[in-house]
Amino acid sequence: MTPKQVRSLLTVIQYGSINQASKVLHLAPSSISAQLKELAIELEIDLFETKGRNIQLTQAGQSLLPSFQTFCAQELQIKQLAQTYQTGLKGSIRLFAPSSLCIYRLPAIIETLQVSEPELEIILIHEPYDYETALKQADIDAALIMTEVSNLTKIQKEWSSSLHLDEPIIYVAHPAYLTTQKQLSLEELNQYPLITTEEACSYRKSADKHFYKAGLTLSPRQSFSNVEVIKRCLIAKMGIGLLPECVVSEEITQGRLVKVPVAGAPYLFQSHIISLETPLINKRLEKLISRIKLS
Image (cartoon, rainbow, N blue to C red):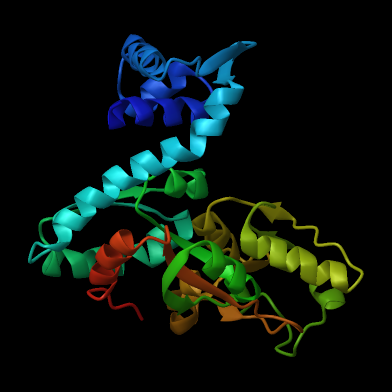
């Protein structure tokens, strides 16, 4: 049994078909099929069964899935352990980050590492992506995520978490857009055109909960997945936006945008680098994070 065979199996499971897995792994579908057949012959069981146009694990395959995931994770840990004995970090770090953190947090990390770790490559993966499954299958080493402070206990219970950085989520607008600087109630805020991220976004969900507790419904005039689009709309005086403060800090300093005081806001979030709770991965990430300085 080889890591390549198991990695192909896990990728087929994740994407639901051999053709999709072949695109991700940059292998011919026939090569993946051959690997799965060799693995099934060695284990002397049927690993997959057909369901419609897709394939899925058999019951026996499902029972072995956690062991397959551990198998791939152990391969990665051995490689990482070998690298910790080197003076500098070498090889690559596979890191997931959502678009807003890619733009406003990752440049500081990469700039630091270019100087301190010139032989280390950062392979960046961004949305849309199931980073939790990818971490468990060792497809990535770590994820830079933003989470609500009230969820920290859950995050810390499931993952090794480090590099905590406060990320307040604020309401913001063009300084000429509002006629008042007083704190707005949610009822008053709801009278303005609101511009937010899509419903699946974590800080949009916090705003939804905030409105729901007040007996109101958050109904944005526009919602976009890209924070840069929202910022441009605000600069064009199109409404009040909901964004991480790091996204608009430069514009606020320049006076191009202003914070809008709203009762019950800002929403308290933090960004974290999370990884599997394993000593070998943690040792390497601690070495990496010790070189990173964020402000």
